[in-house]
Length: 244
Image (cartoon, rainbow, N blue to C red; front, top):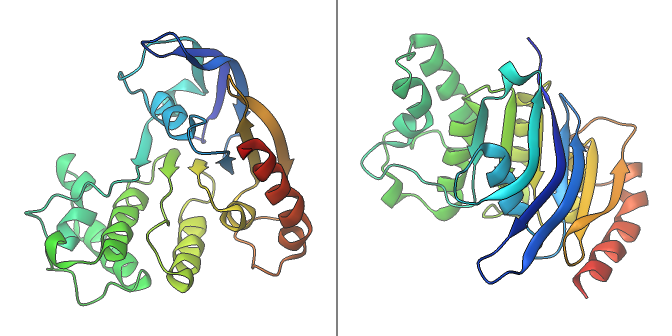
């Protein structure tokens, strides 16, 4: 089996007062690679992820399809960590396996290895209330990576992390999601340049695809990578124009 492509066709979403967020929005998410969505605050990046996840919170017209459709199960990481407060860090990381009745020594070992790589060793038995915001976000990321889904939807997954930890976790995420279809929402241009095979910029009113950027090298890229340094200035300029 292989990761699916995602096709969004003529997506239209209106709010109760009649204003439209999307009008005939059409875009393609390539299979098996990481696509970053950038754009100004309020342009619908998080809403788009929720719609792709199958959320019933919004009524829309148009279509969102996966090809092949049988591989459309998604792993989701939102801006809130949603850790269960009565469960330890280790048990939160293993939550998906527990709920599916699939927990095994192999899963426990994988979780233990990820916890070490994420710099959380020694906190396996800690409850979320005793963890910092950055530690909680790392735990939520590991829980998402443990799912090993064909599709990962990630909304600002590294935002609460300090600069060095962010780079380490970006590298780990890129390593763990190779071959998956990853849709990553971020406000960080450098993060998008490091992590993506393709960047899609949303903007306008109603929101449309304003620009697209494809890369010849594979992520994660070092901050001094030639493609990162080449595209950073023009990308930042584009984002500033969309935000004005």
